[in-house]
View 1: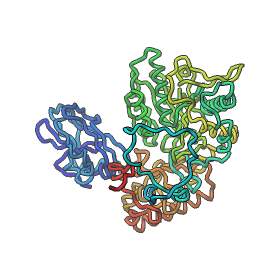
View 2 (view 1 turned 60 degrees about the vertical axis):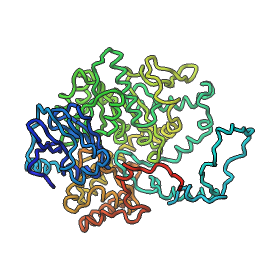
View 3 (view 1 turned 90 degrees about the horizontal axis):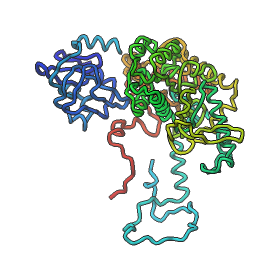
View 4 (view 1 turned 30 degrees about the vertical axis):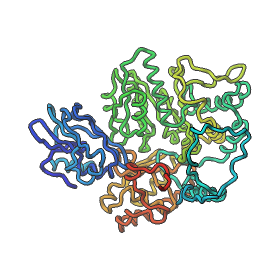
Length: 126
Length: 479
């Protein structure tokens, strides 16, 4: 399993890259994309939508099931990765490049895990 | 295989249609096509061969073992078909005067009476077309109930994380928002989680019992009490009724309404489009909201009646009437002794097969006794050999056996969910266990090889991503 050390992780399998003091990029972890299997549809919020830490901001449909994706931060969506809407397989191919949303005006962040902590939490789940 | 269009040869034709008995009418020229549509041209025998070839590629419970978890693929007795083919049922017009269809109305009335007795409900509609349509109907009853009391702040439906995906979907369709509550380590409702989730905004709870991992919730009475004390109603998803029919009644567990899947529990055809039938039963306090019409019995005979605060119609006319006739036949054939015996058989068969597969080395997600179905966890095998639940399922096809339900419930990541039903013999279960044993040995020997299974079926692994993203839904003629 690939868990880059420079990112932070949520228990619900999203990665967070802090790109500034109150801006971040959010995507899906390798563990999650592998468990989900081939992803066929991605539903993302719109730019300007508010996201809340611990609440769903979109969903992913794989050949197995539809799953919510949860925001690890509270803030406002500044950009969405539109490329994923046409080519969801990018998440399977390279999940740490295939960010889903960029968030600004972050006011709150969940207690996030380090790479090692996240690996340990996945071991428990698997 | 080729489509009818691809089998077409110019000049071939069949005399399948009778001569037209009404005079031809010449359409105005501006409404006419410039050229004839590209319809296939085939002789009758070519059409027959096409459909026979299609039929040979299908797999139903009449072909072999079909333990598709949560789907209750029991045998559909042929007496059901005999009864549903009686001209007194098939040659009716749905708008005939009531006095001329008393027998059909009596059949509907008797079906509701018997199904109410089995479920512990006071009233019922036969209108919903299948399970999810029944869920939607039941939720509208719950909404109508709260609204009739001016209790309009109740906007949330509580659904456990092990629920069928249709539950949250139906709740949203009915205008509610969904509160998900986690299961405990046994796959049952976490009571503390439920207590925290209920409140003045709770419209109701949707639950199936036994749940999707095949466990009867030991706290069921406490669960329905917590919801009722918070002012909510309890909805029973009848998906798993085959485990308890004639043994325990949802009405006695504290549920206010319920849907049944006649096509599952009551042995009517499904899996190929059915049609299904999803009657909704309710307690007396919801009866006034039922869809219209319901059949009532009076001294003068049977009548179609509109409940006073009815939701209206959930679909045209009376539901899938001939499916109800099949289910009624099933209930009357089994009788008071046969109905509980069927459930006991379903539970016994599931436990027998579960024990055999556990002994072979398959991991069970929730070891111990199960009800009518059980869930295997292929996670460890996948880690050790690379063979996932998908590989086991695909390889089963090579042995002429339908795979179990895969990747459901979602709380078990590599789930295979097995529901043998009561209509399989010990010999069938033994033969199935033998195949599962062979496949486990193959996985341990070379898990990667199973990634190419099935090897002996008309097609191998379909392109699921392509089918989801770029489905070809109709034939188009070559340019």
